[in-house]
Image (cartoon, rainbow over the protein chains, first blue to last red):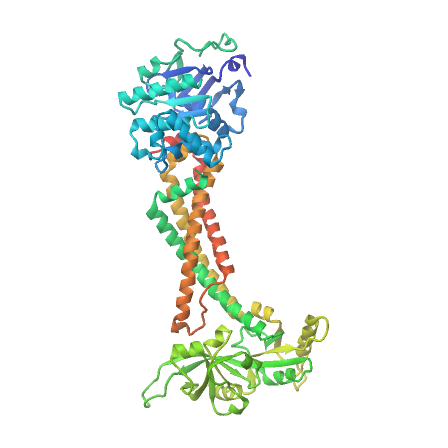
Length: 246
Length: 394
């Protein structure tokens, strides 16, 4: 464990990613830390590696080089990455990705199969509580196609919170929403982040989304070019000099 | 929500495809259950007959593939009957013979004919006492030389025959004196006549195709008594001092060695295996399509933390549920089909309606195996999907 990694909830140390054809270095030694209860926005032009970085931080993919740490522990040595992802990370996607055959209540329960053990009744009760939290309690029995796009993203947000994760990763969460719904979802996202003291990492092209962040990280050509200004809470330990925030 | 609810919802989202898969697979499984059921019914009926008649040993010509092609000299039967340890002997000449249902009207007329199973019995056969005479009477030793016969009730129904009617066997007229019901499937569709007359007509004087016997069991070990008689029969010699070409076995072993039953079972399995192979391919196609169509969803499930094992369980669970549904439909179809076949005159009462529970259970087990086999490759494919690539899949 490095001192720098220990200071952050999630810490990427010099991660690199090259896609199989070898032609594209999607990430070229990115170092980035996210503290508990910190809201970080990652911006940059299309193809700069934002989503690739989000996938590596969310353990959806493995880096070709470097290491990702969670609470100071290197993730490459963990054997239970699926369980880790289920219990520690919530995902919100641009296209919502709700399962069409399931109701909102059932969609929220999908991650719970891999969360802490709950009975079917407990899962349903928890899903209802989460839907109430995102203002979708009255629409719990509806399927995604019966919901507006804004409602779908709120259900997706409830699903992301299903196992009470410490970290929320969002890829263009307002990208498919009109401005009114985008504001509503963003309000909800930031409120939940603060109330639940979640670490929130958002990949976005939206200035509105970036403006609300504690820190804005700018990327270009697979590298972090600016780690922005942090209004994040003071870390428990001082960050190592070579890391700073990036 | 239960995991199985999730699986069921995946199946019901494509109701037409699910129904067609279940239907296709149920035809495969139903064919298998019906064919194996019919073959098992034959075997069970034979076993039941030997058991109810208290048969301890069955004798046929050694090396004969089946009873129809067996030929044993009647002197063996006489010798066996003379043994003090033997309580009774049934001897028969079983033959598949052409029968005409009516007299020719003139010389150019060819009456309709059919192949029928003839059982030519000795008048003293103990098998007569097991027949339930539904109308008329049983054959007696006093009927010798009069060309009389009894017919099974299935034969009578299928050919519209009753007591007093005549039939022509080997171009000789026989008069029906009784209609009977037997616990033996074959006997209900056959004709029983006097051994001596049929031997004369068929040119097989003093020949039988086989015999069965009951043994007096006096010692504490009944099996030893039966084995002793078996050895004694095998030790019999003809007037020239040569051993008779006769094989004597316990009924269970005789059934296991029966070429007819083995061929019937083998045929049933061969046809079933073809049907089952089609079932596996059909299942694999359905599940592969389901996985392909849901690639993005599987990516999402992996992203929210589902391990490969749960994805595999989901796909296999769907395949198994399809299999179980097909097994239910197939089993019901097989039972109905065998009942309908049993009613058909074309099978002449040789098929018993219904399927033994053990065969149905076997069908269920095989269908679940089909589900596992057909779902295995798609499940493996689904589990190998990388979440990041699967989510991008369109």
